[in-house]
Length: 286
Image (cartoon, rainbow, N blue to C red):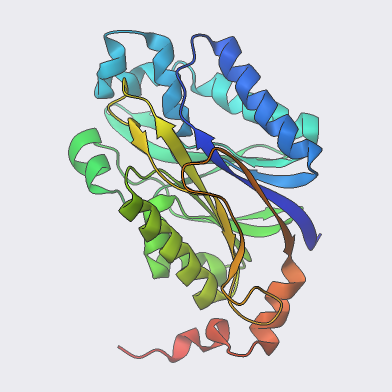
């Protein structure tokens, strides 16, 4: 399949009071996107941290305690996304989760759930200062690309999108779309991710989808303030908008941003573009 609709979310933080509320909210969001005929749905980095509200005080304010407590919900969280992907016949990149792999070892992990087959995941590669110095989240398994019925895609979690060689490795492995779930607490952070997304789209002449966490949760030491706008970007070249912005939402406005994707445009611009950034990458000299 080369042409389809994508939905990338500006997903709001919340304070759920029960697991049933979590299920209802996510089911509503997925159903809405499916009703708009979207076949690929992207949720943001650390969207799973809203689940920490279920544990109540004093754990709500205990960042490290939350990491261990959240592990009791991770299987249900993954199964919910996989069930919705199968039910609606869509591909879902679930909001990333602090996944425990060993005692005191956690990775920022985003799961890709598809209508057919087992879920697969991408771990964040490069940690921000907050993740390193406060949270003790560490880099996980190496990056990869995912073969799907919609095409081959890569996932660059937030800060990872700001490092060109990471994205380039995924593109050279065949990715024609990059998914960028993000979580930033200031406009400067949002703009770093957006500028990086547009740069990656230009360099590799591909689509880049950005999904931010938005809103405030004063009770949370991790996701208390969240700023961003959902967007879909491409190379400013033949077949794409002159500014490279395929679709973009408003800052901090929760909701889906929908966009048509045509991978034939990617293949054509890589061969016949006004410039050939993708092909000429190897000509760079230090």
